[in-house]
Length: 67
Image 1: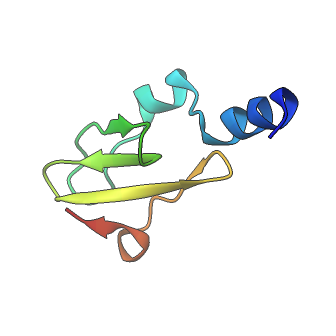
Image 2 (image 1 turned 90 degrees about the vertical axis):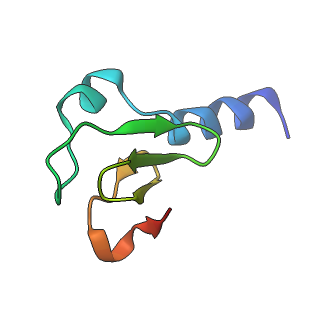
Image 3 (image 1 turned 90 degrees about the horizontal axis):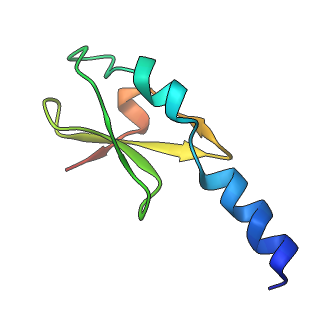
């Protein structure tokens, strides 16, 4: 993998910190924790992990992984 490809991948998996400040769990309305290793947003209250695909958080409970 070239440096350019690696940088492009980082851009796809990185989430804007400003977006993280305003996103909440659709079920609990609680703030979310970003897990960069799994590229997910964690809702501890709902015990769900919402995926981030191509830099877009998928905030649908049916798409989330149970913790």
